[in-house]
Image (cartoon, rainbow, N blue to C red):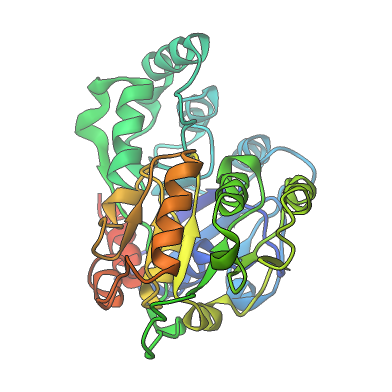
Length: 362
């Protein structure tokens, strides 16, 4: 007797860009490959379609100028697909959208939360609104997944602690094999730093620029900080660099497709972020045996251990960061251990995919 293949839908509010291939792209590719191996048919709903990388292997149904939510509901209304599981990524949680899905499908709905929270928390009005949405719409979601323990706790805080029994953590992971690890000794004096980040205010790169402006001139003369990434805040960052006369320190490299081979040429990653969920660039850096200097926001402290595989400084504390960088440049503080094994053992993309496939057994 032939067994009908399982049919799932994955809804991702994530633009597919050939110029920006990151950890989530690799996850989508590997997850889809494993689904094919297990005879699971997957329909992927993205804002756009593409054929770069392994996206040519995905059955992508683009939105065609509708919002992703509207497009998916229209698909359910006009197509005869019956899904066993519907999985959402980068979709707002606890909205009427999930109630609408249940009008047409008996599928298990699994909602992934990738969203960072603001440093000071949400305003009162928004907090109350989220609590109300939790009461009204959480019943239509069968399972909530946080990409870090911080995120899982944030789900309970935002929408209600009564969701604890159907909330769990599946950590983001990275494709280890493609990341070239640093094998040479880290420089104890005048180390080389990099930043890998989308250039927006919440990433805190302006704090780094200000912190460097406090460093003594003799320590700055050979200092190099390369910034990889692009975004709407770049003009403001360039203005700050000019204001503090730091053009010889900061190099804006733009988006690079070969980052996985570039980490090895540096000594430390600096991530001065104000809000984070679970940073893939931190995982990639540690996988490349490059320690991380970052803030205690989001899930950062779930992977970066102070004085072990990196350094943690208080968010927005530019003076503390300045002192820390000065001590690292002078060789007074340093990390000596190999940072890669932690990522291999706990935060690989293979572990991430394996845990996501287990969800389809529910």
